[in-house]
Image: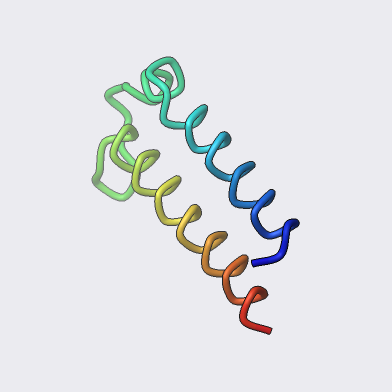
Amino acid sequence: MKKRHEQKLIILSFGLFILFSAPMILLFNSEKELFGFPMIYAYIFGVWFFSIIISFVIFKKYDE
């Protein structure tokens, strides 16, 4: 794996660590709903989904 791809994955890991920290998650702990789901669930699964997409793009470029 190229060094810059490894660096991108490390940056993604630190970003996810910050986004999944308790203060960030508690910002979305409210009674509001998005498409019938509580905001905290929408936030957690949204961040998770986008992290998978970003990881896929990074690994896809690694294969080329």
